[in-house]
Length: 135
Image 1 (cartoon, rainbow, N blue to C red):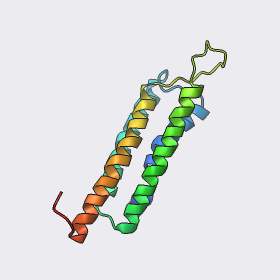
Image 2 (cartoon, rainbow, N blue to C red):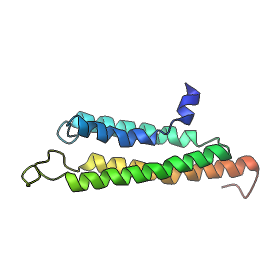
Image 3 (cartoon, rainbow, N blue to C red):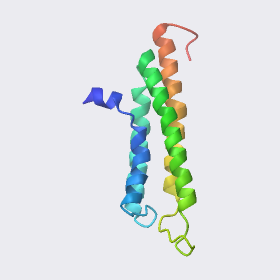
C-alpha cells in the first residue's frame, strides 16, 4: 500500500474530480458538500505529494517532474474548457456548469504541486548525493 502511495501521481485526482462532477452534472457551488470534499482531497494530495517527494532518486525525480508537467497541461486544458463552456444558463449555449471558487482552488493545487514537489525532490536529491550547500 505504501509503495502504491509513492508511485501514483496523486495530483491527477485533483484534475479528475471536477471532470467526474461535470459528467455527473453536479455543480460544486450549488451542492457545497462536493466542493468541500474537493478541498479536502486537494489538501490531502498536497500532503501526499510533498511527503512522496521527500526521499527520492534520479528516476523518481524525473517521473515526478514529468507528472507535474502533465498535470499542469491537463489542469490548464480543464480550466480552459470550463471558461469556454461554463456560461450561465441564460446564454444561448444552455450550460449548467459555471466556473467557481472550487475550480480555481483545484488550479492552485495543481500549480502548487508543480512548483513545490519538484523543488522538494531536487533539494532532497542534492542532499542524498551530498552536493551543494544545505538548502
